[in-house]
Length: 101
Image (cartoon, rainbow, N blue to C red):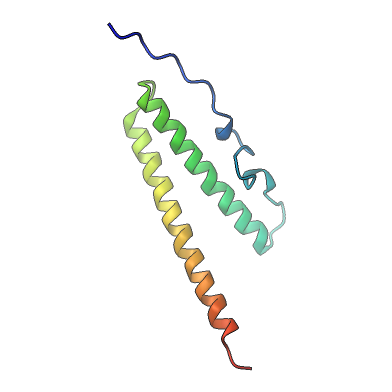
């Protein structure tokens, strides 16, 4: 008989302000463009960390596979939107830099 899997400890990456890249801990309180970008990237990182945590719990048999799939889809969609917006911003910057003055 296979012994049951021990419960997973609480992940520090799922707490607000935690994370490996430091983006979540540097969210600005201002309303400037840089603060908005920082907040958006922090939210994306938090969504990805939550999805990873839910997937680990589901794989260990402690969570719902459905909620893990929903969280993974949300994280994937958010990542796709972020990449698309980044590409558009780079294209716009390149177009402005190539303008003849």
